[in-house]
Amino acid sequence: MIVEEIRKQLRVAMRKKAWNEFEEILAQAASQIKGWNELPYYQGILLMNQQDTETGLELLREAMVSAEERNQFPLAIAASARIAAEDPKDLTVRLRRSDLYIAMGLVSAAYEYLLREFDFFRRRNDANSLYYIVKKIISIDPTNLDLSLKMAKILARLGRKEEVRRVVERAVFSLQGQGKYDEAAQVQKEYRKLYEEL
Amino acid sequence: MRQEALDLEGKVELARMLLQLGFKTEALAELLTAAETYVERGNNDAAIELYQKVLEVDAGNKIAKNKLYKIKPRSAQDIDGVISKMGIGEEEKEEAKVPETPESETKSDVAVAEKEPEVAKEPVVEVPTEPEPLKVDRIEKELLSDLETKPDVNLATIGIEEFLASIGPLLKNTPEELIQRRKISDFFKDEGLWIEAFFESRAEYRTKPTVERLFKLLSLINQSGDKDILVTFLLTESFAKRDREVEVEILSSLIATFEGMGRAKEAEKMKERLQKIKGTEVSDKRKDLQALKAELEETKASTEEGTKD
Image (cartoon, rainbow over all chains, first blue to last red; front, side, top):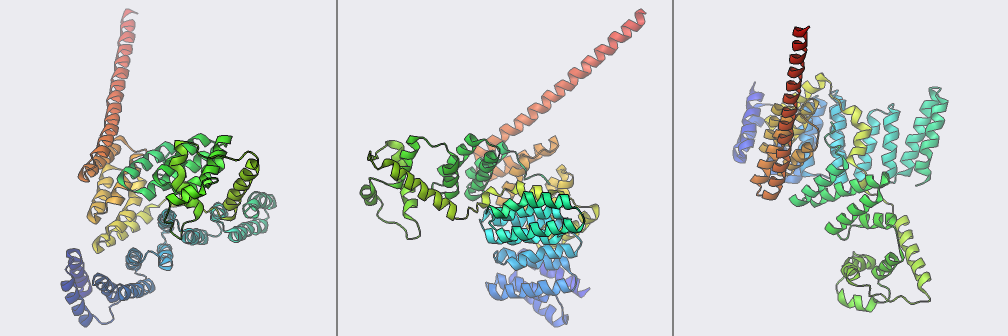
């Protein structure tokens, strides 16, 4: 009950951008609620607004991990969003957010989020980050061979020869393991050129 | 979830508008994606036009230059152009014109960027008769080997449509997922993370785009004050197939947004599009009335025939 009331007060102060008031409420919360796991999250927000970005980001990362451990996924996602807004290059946090959606059983939300990220890095011409986004997509459901092979084509466009080879070989082995030899041969024939021509 | 999947004309139109709004990078990405798709479809003329458009906006765009070099048919005149761009025979003259070259830029980059207007004015290059074929050959080979050695990672050509086509079928939210996402959206709203709330709520809107849902989304973007996302969302939506009343609201919102931003020209364009939709609406109603009239006349005729019998 106290937690809810404090959270409400903090949100009101945050919307008003009344950071002194926010700090006071937070100090009060720290003394009243022992071991409140949301504390680093709100402290992080405060510090970022007080221009102590580094410590603020550190606290938000801590809050994200702690929220995830306690299955407070929306809070973890909120922390991740705030980190990404302040530090767009933190790819680990950005990728982790898709894991949070998956942990909530929101697989399509994870894909949708990765689509946003794909567009984000594409527009910034960041081939390296884009590569990790594509890899993440494949990792969500490696048994989805159709998707993996489509992603292999994008990996090929990114010049990731070895990765393409790995994805294709994995698909071929998987098909062979299922006794689908004709399909495996077809895939090998069609996709081999992707890494051989690079 | 096909709102990004615009047709090529739509993409070009979107790029044009983005350009007018000052979103240069986004506009170039759209143009390059559309051009690449034209190439894939074998329509090189259209692609060339778009690559040239890219170069008009960004004269140093290497992707457009490289692609143009690959697909543009080369005549002897083009080769002359290449030679002149490479600065053969007039190096001293040109060097005098370009006194300061940033170290990061290559010599050929500067030559292309700085000499293009001159090439357009008059072919000033005097190509020596004897060594000409050798030089052309050498230059083309150098240029080609340059293109081949640099990995051609052109992210703009990896269109969002291509990516969507790969994961599109996976983006459908189940009713349970939508409920959860609504909860996340509410949490984001409480936290003042308006744009994040917008992206969560957009899933529900896309499942069934209605005016009410559209207004909710617009209110979230307005709360954030992010005009870029507002314009991009509305522009993209304006090219998607939606119910007429939703389309009308999208265009009306775009008009209001443009007017609010002092972009009268864009607002006028949108008004024209809105008028078109409303015109279609009127003509559709007229068609309905005509059909009704014909039906009534038919019924009347058959009743009269029945009476005669």
